Image (cartoon, rainbow over all chains, first blue to last red; front, side):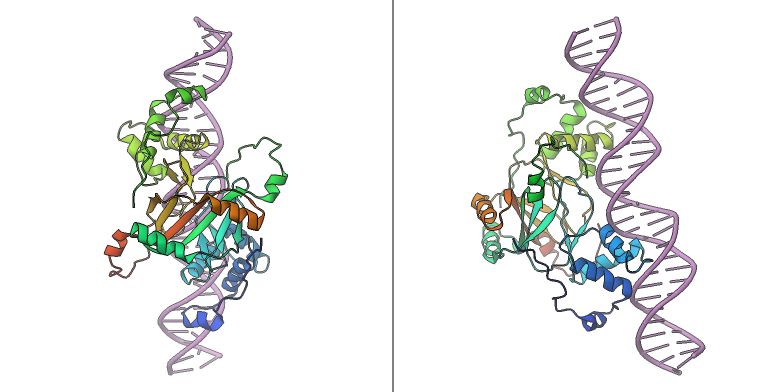
Length: 161
Length: 161
DNA sequence: CTATTGTTAGTAATGATTCTCATTACGAAC
DNA sequence: GTTCGTAATGAGAATCATTACTAACAATAG
């Protein structure tokens, strides 16, 4: 499985941003870089911790404000949260192309899948249901290699979140 | 599009419940009925309001406790939350069969789709990635008929949650 | 009947997120 | 470079969803 990283390589440069009516300030640039520079589908809190390592006075509110802004501008995406353990916190994704996910139902980790997206599925489903469909996303579930290694020996202690 | 309702029709009767070590008490029975009796993928809060109409002293804590319990017992499911407006609250589903969803990206409403699930996709993806996949779920996105009718005239006022 | 365990309402506590507001940074015009 | 309007920020309060805790009560086993 190839992990899609897709750093930097989206068409929006600093000029585009300025044209759109907002500046690429220090905190904002760092927040964007952090989300784009990882494939961990980070939470706001994780981004905050990372940003602080370089700009220590950045507040959590600023991180949230800018994550929302970047989502609105289409520069990053917000994932539908995961159910079960670790739910409750929003996850963000610097890879704005449509792609599928594999979610480990044990540890809650999410991996991008690089498999091609079947656009014809949208058309077929639209035809059958009469709905206007813009796109779809497939979520695969199972146990990730790491959790498999841990071989369910320890009877799965049910931990919340 | 057919809406899957699937009330009542799962193999677990009252005896099974008792055997499993918990009683189908008044509040608990109502909570289960409410989730199974709707296709709205309700939040805990919605269930609470409904239950109260019949048993007014039921507390919100009881609703949460029992929803989690019913999920653990496999009698209902918890959905991966939706992104964007209205995110932040867990959604539950009385239809425990694997099925796909259509999410309106405008109002956040979720509909069940009755289309067959392609199990071979799991096998193919597992072969390609080496992951152990138990199942998948397809989320379709678009605007629902109701929101389409509202024809984006009113420039979409961005409401949060 | 009595000990044990399950269930509850009510409420406090927590975690994630948003909001408010006073302050600061920036860019354009003078 | 001073001034002015606006965008952006940090800090903390407020809000929302959820969980944890507690004391009381009910069902059940022995």
